[in-house]
Length: 212
Image 1 (cartoon, rainbow, N blue to C red):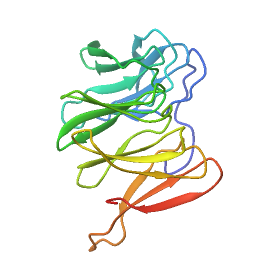
Image 2 (image 1 turned 90 degrees about the horizontal axis):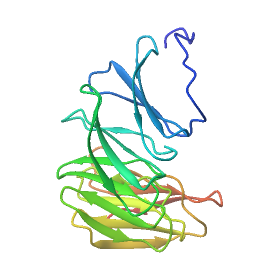
Image 3 (image 1 turned 30 degrees about the vertical axis):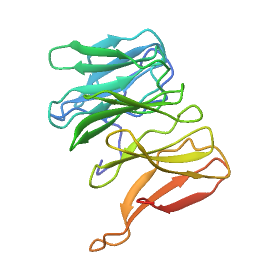
Image 4 (image 1 turned 45 degrees about the vertical axis):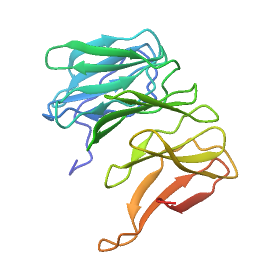
């Protein structure tokens, strides 16, 4: 990174829309592909270490669980997967009743995995609850700094805030669809003012008080 020179490159089987993530140990890079495969590459060389096959395109960016090291990823086959890349196996898969375009979001307190679907559902795994928005969800969920609220945008032109129990706290109507992932932040390092930034497809950036 200091020189900007390419250390390695790897040609995968199809188009890549998802972002890559780095494993807990830092030795692997994980990325999904249009051919339905999740690739695990060695970070020092780009060599293929393992591939996992789903049943449709993987546009969802993988997320790593910092406690267990599991990799979570969604697929257009309507399933979310938990992968143990060290044992080269799928630990579990869950039917989410809709294709997953957005990236899973890991919360540590409580230890939940949040997934959103193009069927308009926000799902929390372990325990399992669901919340229905008014349209498809392309926006990846994000959590507040205290991990007590979950935020996401929807095709229905609303930004949503849900509690960790899955109850609607509030929703805010924008002037266009929201595909981008919201960003929760503090107004000042020593301030309790919690804010939320989100962009809509008409080029507007919305900054909201995240608690209301």
